[in-house]
Image (tube, rainbow, N blue to C red; front, side, top):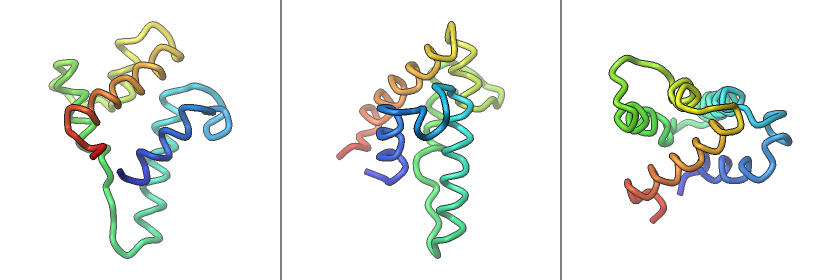
Length: 102
């Protein structure tokens, strides 16, 4: 499985260590920075799975206009904590449905 997915799983256990608090927007900013840095320092760029995850979230919530996956999940959640938890459930569903963990 890819490096970013493994990092996300580490962050699930201790989000405060990585992003300060359980905020989906802080998580999104961290992940975007992670990808940007990786692509800057490595000859071969890796877009990881985030573009596919974005498409998955848009289809899952039947959203045709472009909003970030964090915006969509947060809009459909009752709180920041609920959005954070929903992200991990949706990520698990995405990985399972796309057989990315093989």
